[in-house]
Image 1 (tube, rainbow, N blue to C red):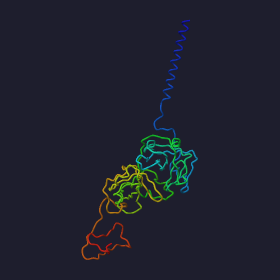
Image 2 (image 1 turned 90 degrees about the vertical axis):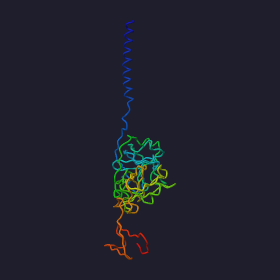
Image 3 (image 1 turned 45 degrees about the vertical axis):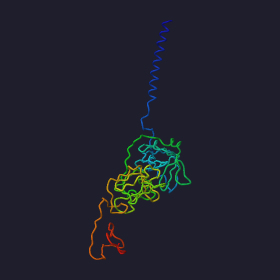
Image 4 (image 1 turned 180 degrees about the vertical axis):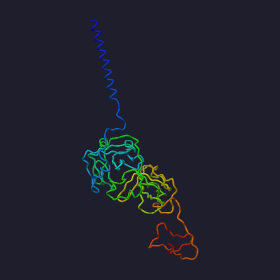
Length: 335
């Protein structure tokens, strides 16, 4: 009797020990977290091809297909220059996500990869720019904000601190037709422009005006052509709104956009302005083919007025780069 009880006790202990090992193994497997930044979802359409679904100007498209885009956040609301929206890009293009809420940068900071399930979202234009949102805005046009609840359903957060380098472009790269520039250009992408400076009058101002957004003009090199001009638009709610516009010359980095026919650049912060070269002073707002910070040659004429200049092929205007002025007494005939 005692021997049977001892055997039964040993068997029960063995079964208990085996069950503990199995449970411990199961628990250890269950607690293993998924790999960081891998959400288990993949994109099945590029941002460029998604934007191509908008075929009519200023229309709103309700997306009904099971589509997923993926990209890196290139601008958030940390500096206050964006409000209730972020921008993201892949290798083919960029797009605005209109999102309700503040401090979006805590969930969707610059450099984070996002996967967006776009089924039942809306794609629409505002000022010519395509945006994704939660519905059609029948009052202001474009799309409405996506609520926080729907953000959790549609936006899957990926890995942080993903590499993001600006596309080095020229003004010619940004000069496309109204419909094509959404699909084929750099709209809502992080770009960089080289050899730019702000208009001389704007260097006396901050990035934004008191109670109003700032529209500061920048141009390339020393020419006065409007073809290379871009408007640096800054919200008066940004944390650098009152910072003084730099007077030098260098690179401008930011998110490219446009409103109608006006090409615009949105800065993420003042680090996007790297003006380490001296200002070019031989032109107007800056811009164009020249630059280098050198002055135009001058000539001193002696003798009696009037003086005569002859340029081959001259009609009613002086050739590019030629200016005639007086350093002493001037009359109404001086031009």
